[in-house]
Length: 366
Image 1 (tube, rainbow, N blue to C red):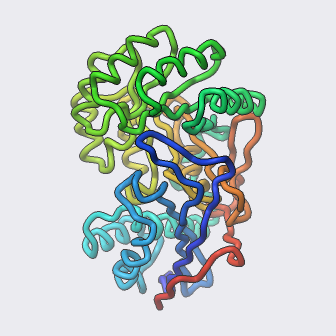
Image 2 (image 1 turned 135 degrees about the vertical axis):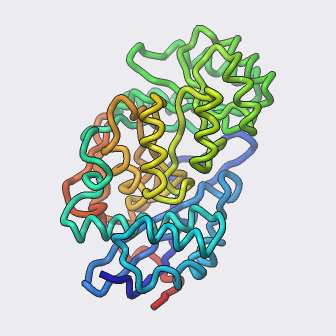
């Protein structure tokens, strides 16, 4: 099997809510997503999707992805997509960094590998260990009354894992969590996501002020060193996200005992090939994971859902259903969601098919 053609598509994903807002004054209503379609000499096609959460969240820029893909295309054309580590190495030799662009190709190769074998990707990633995956729902930064309303609505929809965006200001956030904490149920898991907005003294003051509320603190400070300092003194478990972009950074965190959990975003690490290593290292170290991505439609959701489904329940903190955060569905066959949980079909590959009527063709490489 050889890759004969790579087509690059883009589309705009509009958020279903009023605004997707988080710390640092960052707020977005729409996101540009990139879909890669790889065609082979066997007639099989594989699909991958990546979507940075705006230009100021992660080290990736949506408008720059097509340029990165133009450099990667010559390195993968004529190659066997089933050789995922070979493809990954060729991309790393051709382009330094730019993990998100590489992830789009890598995910499409896993889709092709599954289709060629007649197996769902989760089988190839280790086997189905978490058939029914717990979902978290994000409560975007807003006025306290709006956030409380969102929390109540998600609870009625069956969600027991809640991620609360913080970043009003430390005193305001203390009052917010105290207010919302009165509503917390014993079977719920809460995560307060600061997205790196606080200094370490602010994070510690917050933790001490709400020590009676059972909640994770996610990425309390911008730098790894600041987060490590908070982890060693905080009254709450610390989950890290933006601090880790590579396996080497994660290994440093494990050596330093820097976290109690992590967010594993598949595109941030370069796709499923490197992410499965990160997943296995964390599982072995006893670090639970939120396995997800920054944003995306049904293709992106399917990719990380296959990784989550092949993860031990002991190691899987939760995942999410990003395709349901958008007003439009770009693919059929996306994972099913009900009562705060998600599951996959047993279709070969990722099990999703793009709706090309909703995508704009950007580039073709043959």
